[in-house]
Image 1 (tube, rainbow, N blue to C red):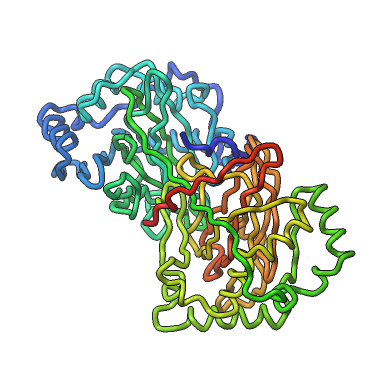
Image 2 (image 1 turned 120 degrees about the horizontal axis):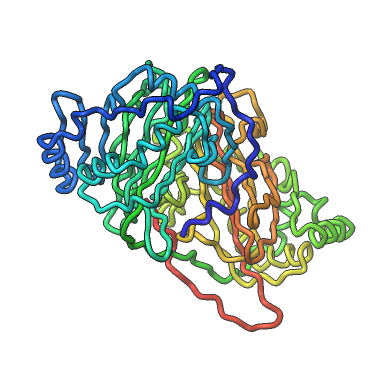
Length: 517
């Protein structure tokens, strides 16, 4: 089960259109919406369901309705409702609903309450039509799936500029049933195009069942019903909305049915710390202020009080300058960033970023290599013990880089051990005049959460080491880097140190590393 619901921002209705809708119109006085009759004709449904079940390509010449056979069964039914006037009035009413800001590691958008509660006449008429035997019979005949008519979810959604929903599978289930079909009725502007963003992206999976790349992108079309079959590999996303003056408006829901299977998670490898090659490595690299006894005592007090500390200007200025210049010299070579950050990390329903692979270890420039070696040493463990009072027997180390479109998510397939997070940040800003990460981007920060509480937010900062003690139940994620970050990149040396239990002498287990995609 995914952990995404744990970090959801408490709902506050903050998005409502200024469009006016006349009140007092009883739902019973509104004619029920009429579905496009072509989609119930036997000749159409026979050809359609065969293509949907057999995963074959299909396009109806009369309506333009399509079945996408790859990467999994999906479909689009244009002109789904017969009346354009009804669609416009439905859109106006939907804009008048109260919307709640939904924001966590996985998504950023606005959602209405369950539309079953709405008393607006055209919304209520649509709700009744969707719950009708006619609609269930049509969907069952089009998908060939025995759907449960007693369970359906229905919400209105708004995606403004910078909103998104990252890669996930929707394969949510209870003890007796699970989601089988996801559907979206688009109510976007008539001229919505691919340049506006917000496409429904469908992911191809590898042999292990992990999403690796977008195989199909469905651009929202007004009055089009898109739907697809859900399974443990039905990974999809709503791409970031790029339009500044249009809103991706839709009604979405799920039909429920038989249970599906899930995947198994992977673990991170941990290795014992090693002896440093030079006894004075701390003195040569680290800002001398942080090595003074009085400063160490102050840092210890802060960490014991807050379980976290941020050490800005951690390396000596000349050391940091050399580190950045050497890294960017490699990045500016013919192969660009891929010459150093050569391994793309996935799967996409868990994470998306680049790192330096083991085979590319010799490419790491000398100053950064020294820093990494220091962080993996018993010498640095002694320094950390002075600051944190913690014994740190082993660690996982990763040199990683996040660019526009990257993220990490809270997910059972990527749960980290509890321990001490130590992240040294050396971000890149490209040709931008900015020399520091802009909090107004609302992107690229690390969030520490427990339950529904956001405990700590850390922005990438030049030459800064952050230490955070993450106990059981506390999780972290890097928020999706939206288009607002431009060419800026979050670069860091990320360490996770295991903490020696004083009460129990437990051996660390070494597992397989994260699955790169």
